[in-house]
Image (cartoon, rainbow, N blue to C red; front, side, top):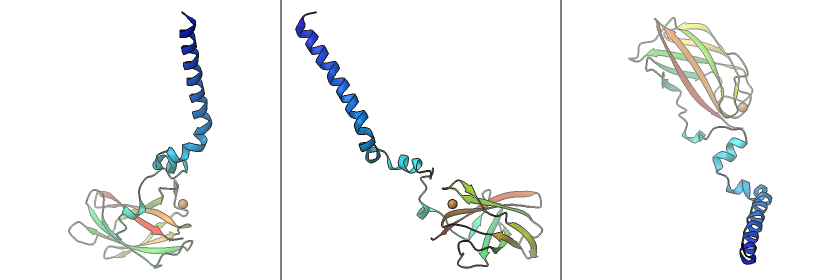
Amino acid sequence: MNSQNKTIIVTAVVTAALVLVGLFVLMPILGPSLMHPIMVEQMHGSGSSVSTSDLNTDTTRTTNNGAFVISFKSQLDPIAIGSMHSWILHVETADGQPVEGATISVGGGMPEHGHGLPTSPQVTQDMGDGDYLVEGLRFQMGGWWEVKFNISADGVEDNVTFNIILGG
Ligand SMILES: [Cu+2]
């Protein structure tokens, strides 16, 4: 190997090393602006790229397997952050017959924050004609909430999720 080739190799190695060191030094400065927005969102802990403006916020929805049509009416309207309140849930079959005697459980939380409901809402009364009293709902912060109901009646079980966007 002659000295000219050695010089070329040394120059190449030094250049490569300088580029690597340069990238390493610049990454913390350039990084955030180069990263994909969704990655940044995940870094900030939201973990979800769902835009809340695309959410279905209907208060009447068909259950996931089509067995029931469920609607809710909040007894606090508009829903105020931090206030304990009740809902009336109305349950019908897919063809519009009120469902009495259903067993209903309540769940939910904030998908973007990874936490559940701050309370344990319960159906406390079958009011007849497909209406059920749900007591103990409270939403302690603004944002996107999911409220889920599992309904079983006459051997049929199905689920529904309502999306609620609270301001503040
Ligand atoms: Cu939250």
